[in-house]
Length: 75
Image (tube, rainbow, N blue to C red; front, side, top):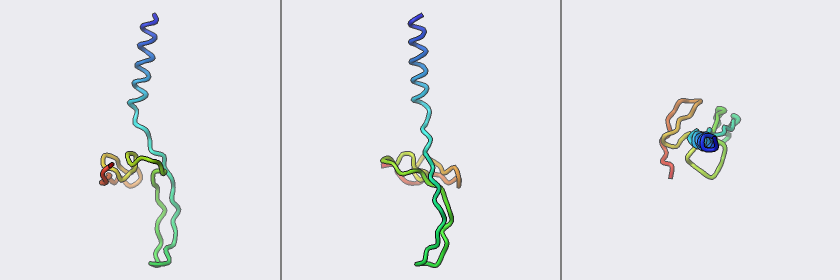
């Protein structure tokens, strides 16, 4: 019984590690740019952190709002 329970717990931990982390999203307000006289539309971006791996612009990722695929190398 202990072996079965231990096996189930290990399996659950492995599955949790395999789930990709969702990038947290930050909404950026629109603003008027006086230097060019234009309005910049509101948008979404990933919240700032110490990694480039979860940014929308990184290769392998895509922006869920615009559908654009990332083109920037991770490191």
